[in-house]
Length: 116
Image 1 (spheres, rainbow, N blue to C red):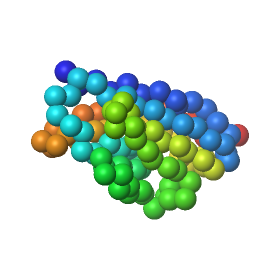
Image 2 (cartoon, rainbow, N blue to C red; image 1 turned 180 degrees about the horizontal axis):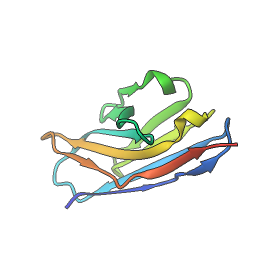
Image 3 (cartoon, rainbow, N blue to C red; image 1 turned 45 degrees about the vertical axis):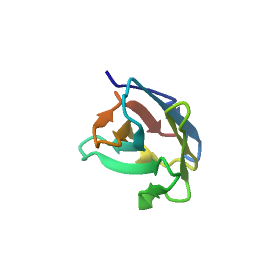
């Protein structure tokens, strides 16, 4: 079965940086889209950034210019470089993949806390 293993969350002061990683394994089909979503307490899960196998990216307005998504197709791994972090970035971050047959899978989530 498909497994997504996330790493890189943690606590950081405002203005700091973190890098999240998510390695996917077990899929019989190529991964079309890889991305990150987040859910803050009391709020709905929201899109942070996605990247297609072609390299095309899409970002939430709230993170544009601060976050960068990238992927290594050979390793089925997606990264999220987060710079200039703000307290409002505090959330559980979830990795998500969508295969070429539109199956979707979620990671277990990793906590990101931005606080002074």
